[in-house]
Image 1: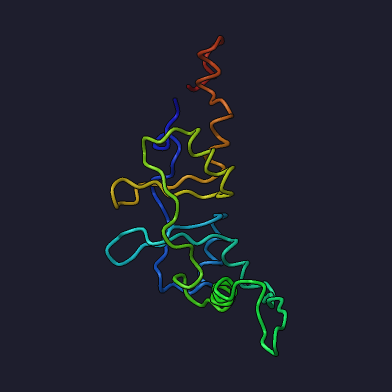
Image 2: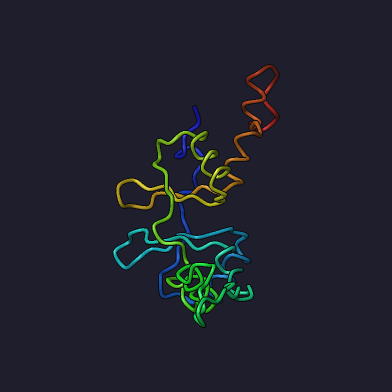
Length: 165
């Protein structure tokens, strides 16, 4: 069975909580990343920031619907949820836009578990941690690569190795 450690990227590009979101957006675009882990000064994973977190800044602020009773306004939508949206829309630093305490997997997690998290929870980037240490990251392309046989795997199923192998 293929495991997270078999497909993860080990040389992980990270950002810090105080990095500005415009710098992170530039990094994501230049490197073609969906997201990057956010690491604190002690090297601990504290969050993840993805394209969708930064795109949230471009959203219009949804005003809550209200109804009135005895001249009082009662919101139909949670004000706490609106506060979170306002905070993300106004984010300047990674710490303000990131998703804290991201879902992670260990190096021994099966690729099926990783795929299930990606599909069922809508995540495209999953940090791989061992203890408190970030050891890798898996993106949706890493999982897709498991579906494409390598040249050597094709050759072992019947055929000569390509020239130069």
